[in-house]
Structure formats: structure tokens, C-alpha cells
Amino acid sequence: MEVQWLLVAHLLITLLVVVSFLCGQWPIFQGTFVERIHYFLTFGLYDYSLRLVGFVFGSRGKDAFHTVENYCCERPNPILQIIYLAIIGATYYISINSSFKYIPGHYVGNIHKYMSLLAVGVGVILFLLTSFSDPGTITIKNVSQYLAAYPYDDIIYSEKQCSTCKFPRPARAKHCSICDRCVARFDHHCGWMNNCIGEKNTRYFMAFLFWHFFLCLYGTVLLGFILAGRLKERRVIYILTEYYGLPNSFSSLFPHVTQWLLASHNTEIILMMFMLVVSLLLLGFFGYHAQLCLTNTTTNETFKWQDYLSWRRKLNEAKASSAALKASMSMMKNGESKPTESKWRAFCRRSPLQNEAVVKNNMYDKGVFSNMYEIVHPLSERSSFYRTKMS
Ligand SMILES: [Zn+2]
Ligand SMILES: [Zn+2]
Image 1 (cartoon, rainbow, N blue to C red):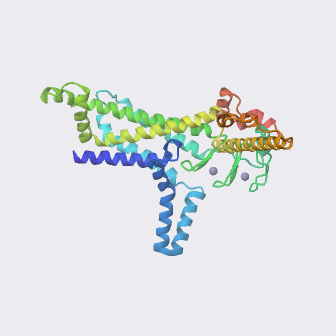
Image 2 (cartoon, rainbow, N blue to C red):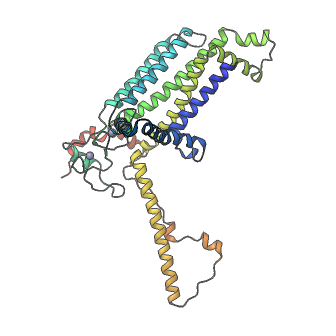
Image 3 (cartoon, rainbow, N blue to C red):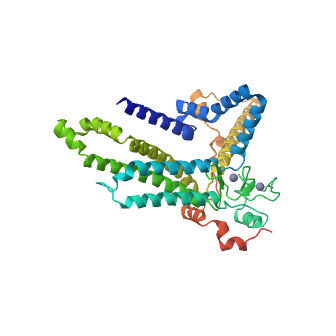
């Protein structure tokens, strides 16, 4: 029994670390211990490690640390790609070893041995497609077409030269400092894929996210049915109710069934919990990106819009204060006395300038269907792309 509790504690700690690392910066966790763990894992740990290396090995050690850091974070490298392949490979291998002997079972047919292999295979193919496909690299040959395809909105994008590539940077593009290239409709640089996510491969990235969500959910449900089949085959409920005389109710059977499952199938339980948590995280990540795709916005643009909207709000506030100051000064000049106004009224009364709506006017948003079509069939792959050219 103690071993089972150790396993549960181990699982909970693993979940806490994974969730804190991946989602600790989300507003929902602000001010909680999850945010503090996230900070420790992302900055604190780095800081302490650097100090420790400096303390033990001196400045040479620190230099070596910075070289490794530069290779891992500033240059393209396959470390996270290898970790992804290790995770999916190990999860599938452990699933085969622990559970395939129960297939076919009471609820699970033999076909799932092949279906699971197919599901993992499709997942790996989507990973390779996203990793090794062109995200929409802008070159001197296609830059004029990209300039015509993505006009400047003069809000978050205006005419600009890329100082590294030495050609005009089309709207929605960004120079990726890791890959050292300008990428059209740049979303973000994905370390897991060791590639940028841009105009041409957002579709593969979205398919990757959705498929891996489905894959984890499929694994969780499949293991659930295998365990339910084991309960049936080993007649656990029958033994508990008939031999041990327990009442046939959920509340009385649940602790005993859980105890039996943890004792006999702890690997499957841990796998199920792991895949369930990952599938929920992937669903959240897919939902976030799907919403961006449907509104034709990129991750890069969400930051630009945030900056723009907060700047506009501040500008309106400044204008309102200056208008109020001018009005009171002109009243003082004319010798008028200010009508008395209750504090509450003054607090609630807002200047017309402050009431001016600060809205996100995204000219690239052409409606849900058109936006979706742009993801599936990127502008640069349409015949019209090569007919248009900026003079
Ligand atoms: Zn560039
Ligand atoms: Zn990149």
C-alpha cells in the first residue's frame, strides 16, 4: 500500500512540475506557487546553475556554460526534436510492453494493435513535416511577390528594411534570429520543431497539435478500456461483492478497485494520467492557435497588438488630461468659477477622448472561411501570387 502512495505522490509531483513549467506564466496562475515554480524552472534554476558553475570552475566554466547555452537557445539545434522522439518512442514502447498482452481483451479488439501503430506513425510524419518544411522563407527572388501579397496596414506594420537580409521586409514577416532568415506570416520559432512556424507550415503545425491531442486521448481511452476489461476478466467486482460482502455501490467499491488497479496495473495508470494531462495541455494550445488562425492573427502579432492598444489607451488618457487642463485654465482666465461637482460624479465622468473606443482593426482578417483557407492553401502557393509583383 505504501508503494502505491509513493507512486501517487510521484505522479502528482511530476504533474505539478510539467504544468508549472508549461503553463506557469498563464494569468490564471498569477501570484500562486505554480507561477513561483515556473519562475524557478525557467530563470531561477538557470541563475543558480550559472553561479554554481562559476563557484566550482571559475570564469572558464562560466564561458563553457555560455557556449552550451548559446548552442541550445540561440542557434538551431535538434535537442528538443530528440526529446520529442524519445518521449513518443518511450511512451509507445512502455504501452506495448505493459498492455499489448491484454489485447484482444474484453472490450478491446485486436485491431487496436495496428491502429495505435498507425496513430503514432501519423503523429511522427506530421512532426517531420512541420520540422523540415519551408515555413515561407523570404528570399530576394520572392520578396516582391510577398510585398504584394501582404500589404502594410500602417498600424502594426509599416515599410521597413530587414537590416540583416538587406531587402524590404513584407508586412507580417519577421526576421528569425535563430534561423537567421526572414519568414513570411511569422508566427513563432518552435524549439520542438527546430523550425519557424510561418505562412507555409502553420497547417502542418495545427495538424500536429490536433493529432497529438487525439493520440493522447486515444491512448488514455484505450488503456481505460483495457483496464476495464481486466476488471471484468479477473472478476474483481464479483469477488469484492460476493466473497468480501461489500455493497454493490460506487462509493464502497471505488477505493478497493483503485487499490487493486494501482497494485496490479500501476504502469498503465501512470501512462493514462500522463497522456490525459498532455492531451489537455495540447487541447488548450490547439484552441489558442485555432482562435488565432480563425481571426488571421499570428502569435507575433498578438504581442504587437497588445503594445499598440496599450499605447493608444495611454495616448487617449494623456489627451483627455491635457484637454481637461486646458478647459480649467481657460475658465480661470475668464474668471469663471468651476461648478461644484460631487466626487462620485467627477470620478464617473469620463472625457469623450477617454471614451473613444480603442479597437483592434486587423485588415488581414477576411472572415472565418477565408482565413481558414489561407492556412490550408497559403497565398504563396496560389497562381495569383506569381502574377502580382510590387514595382
Ligand atoms: Zn531578414
Ligand atoms: Zn526560426
